[in-house]
Amino acid sequence: NSPTAELQARDAAHHMHPFTTNADLASKGARVITRAEGCWLTDSDGHRILDAMAGLWCVNVGYGRKELADAAARQMQELPYYNTFFQTTHVPALNLAAKLAELAPGDLNHVFFACSGSEANDTNLRLVRTYWQEKGQPERQVIISRWNGYHGSSVGSGSLGGMKGMHAQGGMPIPGIHHIDQPHWWAEGGDMTPEDFGLARAQELEKAILEIGQDKVAAFIAEPIQGAGGVIVPPETYWPEIQRIVDKYGILLIADEVICGFGRTGKWFGSQTLDIRPDIMTIAKGLSSGYQPIGGSIVSDEIAKVIDATEFNHGYTYSGHPVACAVALENLRILDEEGIVTRVRTETAPYLKEKFESLTDHPLVGEAKIVGMMGSLALTPNKETRAPFQAEAGTVGYITRERCFANNLIMRHVGDRMIISPPLVISRDEIDTLIDRARLSLDEAHAQIEK
Ligand code: PLP
Image (tube, rainbow, N blue to C red; front, side, top):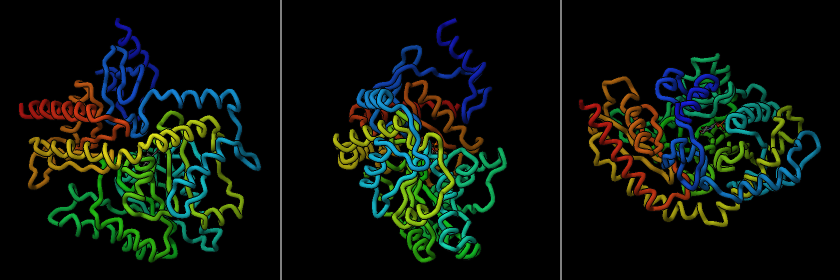
């Protein structure tokens, strides 16, 4: 047995993987990733793989940044752990909170830490309901979210999300969550123009508020651009109308910035790119570039004032973990001082957009949508009608993803959409390689399904 085969066998015997069937793993074996540098992974057979997903949309500064390892080692030696419960604090947590307040738009000046995006959205769920309770409006408890949105895997955040496959397992959604339709023009827009469709989908929020009762709705939560749902860039009419509606009815707006934050869209936050004014932002992933598990909620002055006046009975052993905070601070310093966010906006993203959109001349590709450093290709047998494939949804996407994998390129598929979200530090040469390998993989997938 090769060393890789042995590792795969041990993995299959004992390691339960998220979002994967055992049959799939057992037939192919998991790819064992051993090292990474910049945008490149190395596997146990020595292949170099271009990671066009930045792990799970998170390694914004790229792999192998020694400064981040050093920041962790320094903090582990000085103060490896202390908590932030009750009346204690420590320097990494207070400095990170202050730095986030400086970066966040508007009056989002207060941070509640968690260890992941899921935990942060669980915090938000309790936070907005507690806020209205403390304001003397305890009946305002319903949270509106969207089908095919993704907000995490815990029972609370999974309920906020609109993934029907997740809801089917484990008793979700919990009560008090109402889902409206997503602004996914390609799949659901029919004969409407994208602009009309965007408006219509936003107005579903108003309809839901009126049906449920304005005095019963606590908040609306959404990703500025849906990520895990398939990088669905909403029509331009969508967000201005949503903002009008939440303002009109006094509903709190939670922008889930777990993917869109920290430069992914070309500004620090997706809310700035899409001109949204949230009351709360969920953060994780790019906050530490994935080097440490950390997330949080950044909330407005008004929300903090109300919540801080009561005892909010909520928190995690690792809320504001000092090592995670020290690494996040160093990561933000790198993003800031190396001008990475600005470079994304002015150089890298425009170049990537031009190359990525050139893939629409491929026979399988119906549209290419990209904002900043997150993009998707819609695969279709008919570019005019935007029809799905006759085969089970996702089959062609799956085949394409497998061809990418064989060509040492990591792209993700969501149904028949192919996704990229590379490290923000990707170079022009690496973008060229990404596009060449994607095109080759599309050609191979095309040949395979024509057979
Ligand atoms: N929110 C969004 C928008 C996400 O994309 C994710 C993860 O992909 C989450 C929340 C959950 O974050 P985590 O996996 O860190 O719990």
